Amino acid sequence: MCALTGAALVLAGCTTNTEETGPTVSKVQVDKVTAIADQLPDKVKQAGKLVIGVNVPYQPNEYKDASGKIVGFDVDVMDAVASVLGIRAEYVESAFEKIIPAIQAGTYDVGMSSITDSKEREQQVDFTTYFNAGIQWAQQTGKPVDPNNACGKKVAVQATTVEHTDEVPAKSAKCVAEGKPAIDIKPFDEQSAATNALVLGQVDAMSADSPVTAYAIKQSSGKIETAGPVFDSAPYGWAVPKGSPLAKVLQAAVNHLIQNGQYKQITENWGVQEGAIIQSVVNGAVS
Image (cartoon, rainbow, N blue to C red; front, side):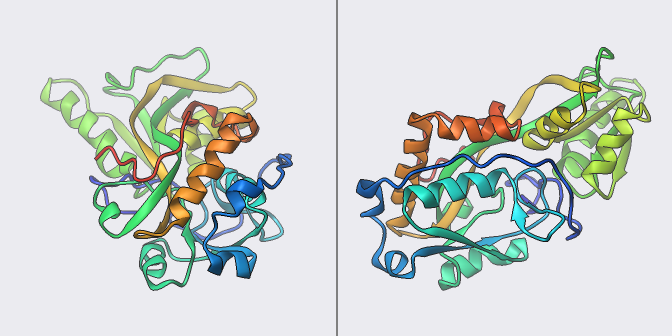
């Protein structure tokens, strides 16, 4: 999320820090699992909490509700993990680029900000994976658009995301090279504005990260739908200090939630179940 293009996905929602409104999503009630909680490092046990660095907004994963509270899919998964561990999660807002250095310095126990687990980042920190995200297009319902042949179409993106800087421009350049009209790329400062443009028919399609697209579709009351499958998928991971036993404890908690169905319920609550994983791993980078 909110990082360099190329090696790491640049995800939507990185340009402002305004509060956003969203639906009320029910919390899944999770019980403590003593056998997993007992594996926590002593420092975390004694503190009774995980201090988590997070960058907002990136709806639906992490953003502020109308009251200023940090909420979202990521938050609900981490809160469930904290419940398994019998502790609480304390969220501290941070600039995205400062999260990994703060993990290395011991300021935060965990970095949680839709961070793509990459081999480059694994040189600095360890990751516990909890979701798979890629890129997914959306179209108006019943008005099909082929993401691989959208020449001459108007396509909305959020400004500065990888969709804006890399993915759609590359598709447009291919169109031009084949003698077809370029894609008319329409960047918006906010993802909500890009989605709205599609709902209103001002553009033919939009390209965004898969959880963003899934959430937008869920909120559109049937006005928009997916245009093709998710592609360029990579895992999101929670960052912890290199070599920390916390990585495997978080992994055990996530896998417990997967096995008992509560993780699936959380993904469905937020409409992002397509990115659900079947097993958490430590350091699962694909590139």
